[in-house]
Image 1 (cartoon, rainbow, N blue to C red):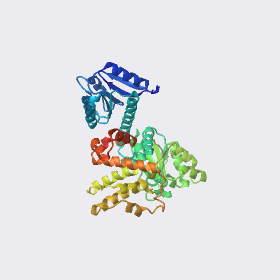
Image 2: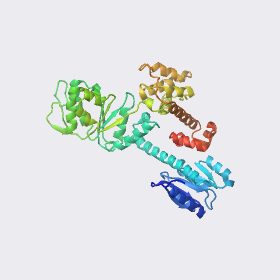
Image 3: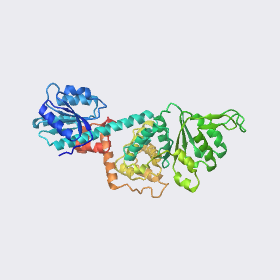
Image 4: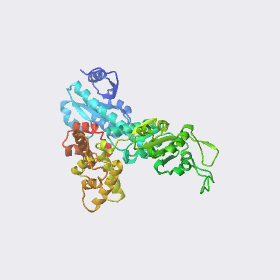
Length: 462
């Protein structure tokens, strides 16, 4: 017997005109911890079916007025990704098969094992939760408009990163973004800004490695006319430009030690004085920093001020290198080859199985920045003659002699490859599940399970 749960799951819209069957199913789901809403007529359930409905629909097929198939069609017009499970008698199996081809999640034949029904509903609810969560994240991040393709991905680390962005963007906490070169640190900083309450104001990005020591105060805090030779007019510094907005300090580790106290004081006091001036100017800004080095170690070694580090790392966001993101390399490569195909007015080439294995096996020492370069060269070279991706990877592998070595487990590589094949098939069939089932030789339930496992959404391919 399914154990009693203390946490409500679902909800499940249960539609069945037979009261005894409906009550029996509802009682079992109540014991299993599901929130169930019962309806004797399909029409009564319609007002509850919306694109944002968080649960699933469980319906008998044969009912008066509006049957299960008609209810399925209604659900499909509202949200094609809303799971609808149909209950059918033995004689209605052909009808249920047609319903599956029309978009039903699954069907259960009477008489059925209640445990089996709960298992199917549980998987459908999991899929629904995943679909809604991905929609929420995609909507929020697309609204920012600055994440672009570099933060696209279905790996767990990218999923957590997107959640962290949404969580911390609404605070004014100082954030330190840590990641290797090419992982997209500035893009994350811009996403944090664009998701914040400061998004209507400036995002001022400054590369600490590019500021000459002699120009530090002028660049950061501005100067008055006549402050030094060549200062013919008053000029705002980066702190003033970021007022009410966000100041992004990139390559923080490159900031000379002697200049760090001046930055620390401005951050502590939230006020500045222009070079050559006497008036104190208050500034209201949020500080986001980025580094590819271990600043904790630098502080211990005395090359970076510990008090400045503590001021800047209220929250640390660690960006994963591309080699730890599994299938994301394939998703990103497909995305950027498509974009470059559009840019150069050439149909983007489709990597074959050998190309995809090479992309998955590569260590990506230059991370996403390197992948973008490879994708562009791949598109350009395929304009003249078919080219595989492997020579391009070998030709750019000059950063690390062991760059093709990887610690990714065989299972992870196989999962990533399987997910890539499913994505490619859905892309080839324009999201047609029936055609994808045929090409992959997979039953509907197995394909649904794999799509849920790899967070693959049919709507992405329509």
